[in-house]
Length: 546
Image (cartoon, rainbow, N blue to C red; front, top):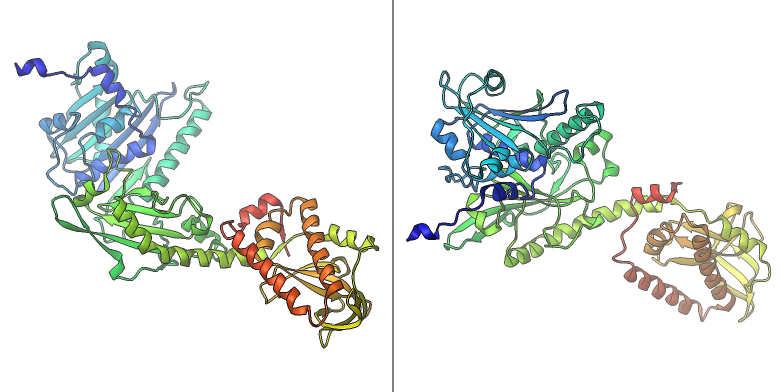
């Protein structure tokens, strides 16, 4: 008999097991808001409350189409019937239940389809299910408080109210004084975090200027949620051509549906005002894909294994990726609508499509950070004092130096009165006489020998360091907090320069120049994958600006 093969799951174990499906408070609340939008609501109210004894309640009210008694029953079923509208933000018929139970042990659904109609109510109480061992809801009468809350949050007509009570997982810690000042502060932070989250997730719906989705008003604790568009479009550049923005994707039934992709490069934070920085929210975490399903953001940031991990040089690049419900299976949407998986062929295509925008974003980021790094001030005082106080080093003797012709006459291991063409500087600051970083070495070399004097005469051998070379920006700047590291590199490069000056002549001059070029080129290649320090790195290392 077929009845012998029916093997119903254990109600207490399964209903409790479904609490751990990966939601947090923000994603759980978003799932309820999805249902409100799917019901055609134009106004959605969320309210978070805590009584004096620390009991917490969350209310979600909307003015959507509402449900009759049968509709409420079906909506509360685990695996509710598929919605008639395939574009609905609800998908698996599990969101209301799994999202709610992830936060609380009791959740109630109250709804009606028109003004004057009786309110229909059902409740899942996990304690009740555990007690009787059955998949049994509770049908309690609507209380006066619930009726008043419905009118307040849903209005006098059709609508739906969801109530979370017995909220044992709403906060991440327990407080010694339930309902006290610390727990109240935690609840306020929870509301602020939710406000920021849904302002991003539903920004197309709550932004009156965005015509891609129908407009709704979303309120949390009586305050209107402000939309946040991740792409800061008034200041950002979209760098994909119109034809490249449309992607044709074939699904299993051989039908082809379009997805849309745009690549936005944000301005560098150094070029933004304080108010603009707050709006752009540029950070390493913010780079990558922003995936939208039916206009609702389901994934914010990261590269979905398409390009590996986060890269500081990509912090200005954000990818806007849109698809409709027709491509749900192609992207393996999960029950929380917060994870997608990309087909390997699609990932490969995206690598090809987005490599040029990534290269451009990298270039813009590096130009700005290199300019910032070049302005940083590294202390070379110790090395200069060491050279000044060490008189027995082997170096060329300078007989004459002319800043006008950029030539020096020296005596070295190659002979006496050898004239070489080398940078000559007069009237320089005495504390940087022997080792000095500059931003005007045009050869691209890391270092350059020179002859310098604090006055018009008495030039001595010195080394100039190229502040724009990767070695200076990526190694010197990171070593700035360690005086011995900087001093050691300074003395090494000064010693190289003295060896060149003590062994050079007109014939060997180009050979030494080639050696400097080759060493400098190899260093650039070796450091290609090392990120240029950011302003945050400077702060951590205590590096100032000149």
